Length: 612
Ligand code: ATP
Ligand code: MG
Image (tube, rainbow, N blue to C red):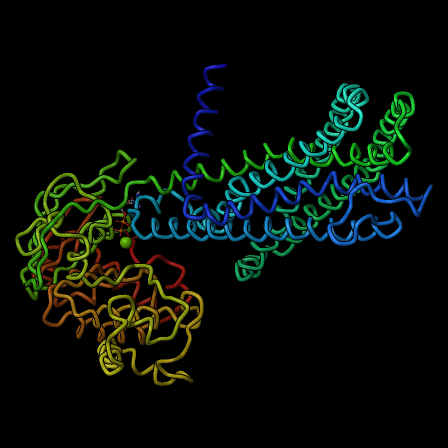
């Protein structure tokens, strides 16, 4: 057990030092801020001393300050005390400004650096990482963890320095004015501190529990808001209403408990504080020695200023631990292996000959092979189609070609070169990909078509691509044409329109190898015709790998591969395959039956899966 505790604290230290390394560029700013906090802390005992002069002044207002000013000489207490007060507060304020502002610059700079490091790592991480981590966590790491971490790196340091120095200065003052009394207090104060600490910790624990219950409420509400269509069409209203009412009731009850706790907490805490104060008052009167009233007031004031910094110091560990937990997950992400990119070959131009030899593939972390012994050749300009049941491995095969996943067995050759021998950037330059789930950005139509490397292309080229993708007709009808904003992931477009935009993007890229993973969603006959026309111009004159859910799309393919459970179970052209009465003919027959139903009642077709 001690062993485990030591190693975990070793690990925390390591994380902390690594975090401090990120502070290095800000060391100058940091020193300025430290200097500010020294000023701030030095003002603490000065404020107590002022009270001494004030009380002395009550007795004899015309008495003279013990220190002479350079030009004026001795100053009467009546004037000296107020002036000194203003000077000290200004001095403290100056220190506070330097400390807080410069520390904010440090911590905001740190946040910026960490955020960027995280985001940059996201751009390089392999697909596997995104499969295994949910996007909510990845996002909250960037937005939330980073802030928590800077709490540990800067706020903790701020407290240690500012409050630590305050304690030292105040305590020094106490010892200096009455060391006997101070030593007695040292025995008593920690006990009081412990009592107060204990009470407030218990209170906070309860508060945290209540906070978690609030989360449930938000969660239920947001689920219903997002899924309102499902809620209404499946008659979930009563269920949701009840669920929400229950959560809300629970919330109310917990809030009430919180109110109860806090209303008992404050008086209880005050009772503890004032009881201890009475002990101190007794001690002060008992041990006063020959101190003047002013000195005693200053003494009590300084002693009263002590608990706050001490409490903050005792809580700093919590801030640090929370920050370290955040840092741990940040560093874990930064330490992830980036996408494998060991190839060195770069080709300016390729012909687009694709050959797959004895390819096997299993997703990392799973046992079940998804692809087994895949072999085929697509000559330059040819169209190869993949068909087969849902889950047979078609998209997986498509994802291996741009190296979204790494294959261990078999070969994928592009122009006779294993794809892993190309640099990633160069390989992907030669491939245009339309994925099964179309991704669009909250931007204009034009910027969505001309995305990334294509951004510099002129508008004529974009329009040309849109025409080829059969998208120009609907774009022209939009109020702002190519400048229309399409909303988050293109919510303002229909499924078919989104697909055509994705195809336009691929056409604009004009790469020698085109991979099209057709969306599974049912399209009406009209959009299907549009997509079909788009495909025809897209596939013209380049090597194409099409994954088709509608067999009508691929009747002209040079080679059709029928996949089942990761294997190619039949291959050939449409005209050869159909009379063979094999798997392809069966798929075909099924779709015809479905298409007939389609004409009678679209609703039925939509509810049934596009592929058996
Ligand atoms: P569909 O026609 O429905 O698009 P598909 O033929 O494209 O299906 P794939 O997406 O290639 O099928 O999936 C093949 C198998 O691999 C499925 O059993 C699926 O569960 C599994 N699979 C897909 N993606 C992953 C992944 N990222 N990690 C692990 N397993 C996966
Ligand atoms: Mg798929």
